Length: 114
Image (cartoon, rainbow, N blue to C red):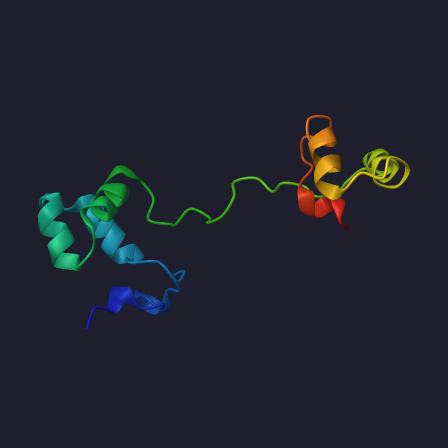
């Protein structure tokens, strides 16, 4: 049984769901003089995973998901522009989105319906 395939690694370390290696294995990948192919075979992981951990200095995972949060909150003036186009011009959602997407860069179609 490969302990590095479970959500808990050595010393009670909790890994994210798609983690294939523990901190101990990552440190071994960085220290080892063995070939990439040998290490991949030994730990039952892809060669790309070996290369990933070999080039890094840390054994911690980077946060998953987007690097920066995008705000979906509209300013009152932006909401007013949307309402004018929706109500007074009687434009459908898709047309409002097309008309305003260059003026309001963070606008997405779902924020029009709120």
